[in-house]
Image (cartoon, rainbow, N blue to C red; front, side):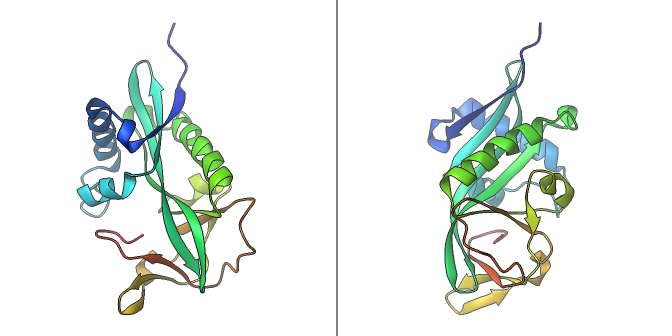
Length: 184
């Protein structure tokens, strides 16, 4: 009898080398080889240092998401944010609800821990069914020279409110700190 899928939470430093390799292979396979969509080393750097949500099925890792802490600003208000990174399901298991299972646990963690959840995606319908909303206002990145607009991200950013979220003006400017690779 096959085992049921289970999601476990683990910190980056508690992942074994074998688990890291399996997760990275899953992410590379799921994101594909298209240059604009491929999973990069910078993407992996963005996904570590927080909490990983790992879905195991019959002894194999088949889905993954991570939540890292970031400080996003809505207008001038700083919000402690659980930022979702590296969400993927192994290609041969897509469409079976495993990504939803992983994200349901990630959502619970975000709601219990942060003022806001955020992520960048082109798959809004998937996240909308899990309670996420598309950010309407403009986006930007905070740099040493001030805020630089990131219009290429507008319409791709989504947020998840939590019990500690302040009232949010979804038309306001939202900004993140600068980082290598994709800032969002």
